Image (cartoon, rainbow, N blue to C red):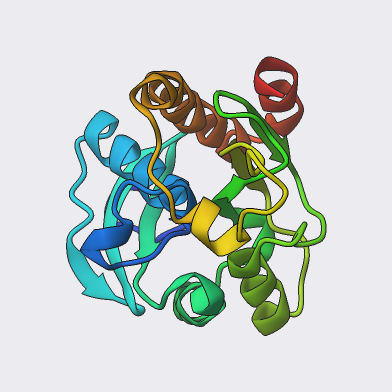
Length: 196
């Protein structure tokens, strides 16, 4: 069949990891959700339907039909939502791009990986455990290390970004859209060269 794939089934999933409660809205741990909000804005797509234990919306990116997802399962159970959507659309891990926060990167930094371990990120751990695969491309958004070793990690990741940090993230969120587009176009190496 020729022509556009419009109306066809979802070919890729782009999932932003985060927590659903209002109190978590603009916290470090919600960098993935915040990135998906930027995708929605840039791609003129609404991520407001409830499906697969997530807020979802369909759009087109990199010539493919894409499901944008914000799991509402809480971070530690993200895999429940992701695997449910993967099974429904029969999407392999290689076509699921996970956007997540990373404390080992400074705010304003981004790292793209084609696959790998969870790196201590519990949402990613849940996805890997429930899917049985590590082959998920991922876009890691730096949220900075704890400013003091005595800080509780949970308190740190659930703290809010400063105004200066929010400005740095603005560029990163734009770059995450471009990076996902390149990954979908089969140009992951180019995305890594541009943004890592």
